[in-house]
Each structure stands twice: as structure tokens, then as C-alpha cells.
Amino acid sequence: MEATATTTNLSAPLASPLASAPDCDRVNIVLDQLLEGRVLTEEDEDYLIHHGDDCSPCFDDIKKQQFFIGFLKQKVSHRKAPSALPHAIMARLHAEIA
Image (tube, rainbow, N blue to C red):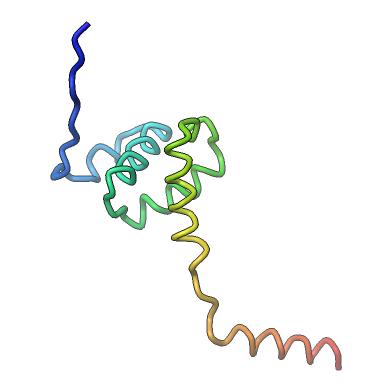
């Protein structure tokens, strides 16, 4: 059996294969793009987050799981709280205490 090498066309548009791909196929396409070091669109980031909550078979491959976890840590845990939040919390506490 002869081994064949596969390559990814890095200059291909990202939207066309994703728009028509079934849910789990789209996850694999987007995760493959992450593995290749591509910057994801905000739509693809949101899709991974929401689909990941609902479909664990998409993340069976451990390498893809590791990249997905790294992606989540980068995107989800670094969101800053609004600057007015501490003041709003303190105002509610003072209102509840009074």
C-alpha cells in the first residue's frame, strides 16, 4: 500500500466549506484550522464554544481536545469585567443591607 501525503490549501476561503458543512464536520474543519495555527473568525470561535457544549464525539481526538482547551482558556478566561461592575455590586450590597 502506497502512502500519500495530504496538504491543506491555506489560501482557500474559510467561509465556503464551513457554510454548508454539517455540524460535526464543521467542528473538525475549524479545529484543523486551529491546529494549523490559523486565526479563527469570531463566528467560528462562537460555534466551537456552543457546539462543544452539545457534542462530545467531536472532541474524541486528544490532540484536538488539547487545542480546544487551549482555545477556550485563551478566549473565555481573559474577558475583562466591566469597569462599573464593582460599583454596581457594592451599591446592591448597600441597598440589601439598608
